[in-house]
Amino acid sequence: MYVCICKGVTDRDIIAAAEQGATRMSQLKECTGLASQCGKCAGDAKAIFKEAKQTAAQMSHLFSAA
Image (cartoon, rainbow, N blue to C red):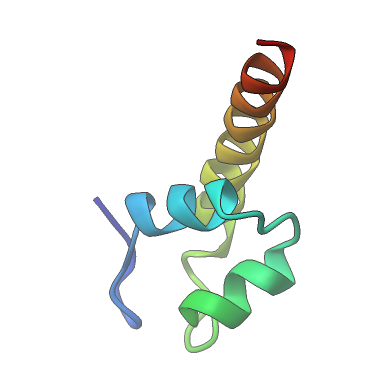
């Protein structure tokens, strides 16, 4: 699903950024261009990013415990 139409950023792009280690919205904006034009996507992007970071952290703990 497209989250940022202005820059063509999808929810998968946001999840991938979190999985690759992005931990702040500023990092997400830097690597995707998200919310840099009209900004209407910022709220939805932040919610998706928060959930993606939590999932990435949980997966990291699972793999490090093995």
